Length: 74
Image 1 (cartoon, helix red, strand yellow):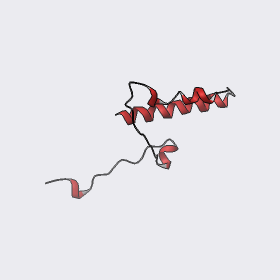
Image 2 (tube, one colour):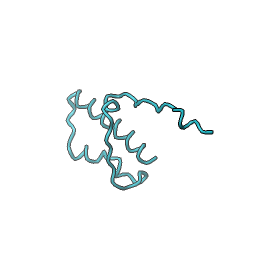
Image 3 (cartoon, one colour):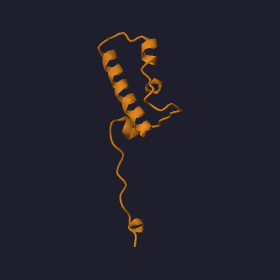
Image 4 (cartoon, helix red, strand yellow):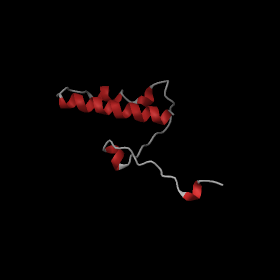
C-alpha cells in the first residue's frame, strides 16, 4: 500500500512540476527536493525503486492477465 501511495503522489507531483515549468515558473532546487513523499511521517520510510513499463510511462495500463485452462481448477 505504501508503494502505491508513494507512486501516486510522485506521478502527480511530477505532473504539477511539469505544468509549472511550462508556465515558466521558476522552481528552486531546494523546494523541489522537499517534495519527496518519503520525507513525510505518514509514509513508511525505506528504499524505494520503481521501474515502469514503457506503456505505463505513456499513460496506458498494462494488459490484464487472461485466464488459461490450466488455472481454472478442478
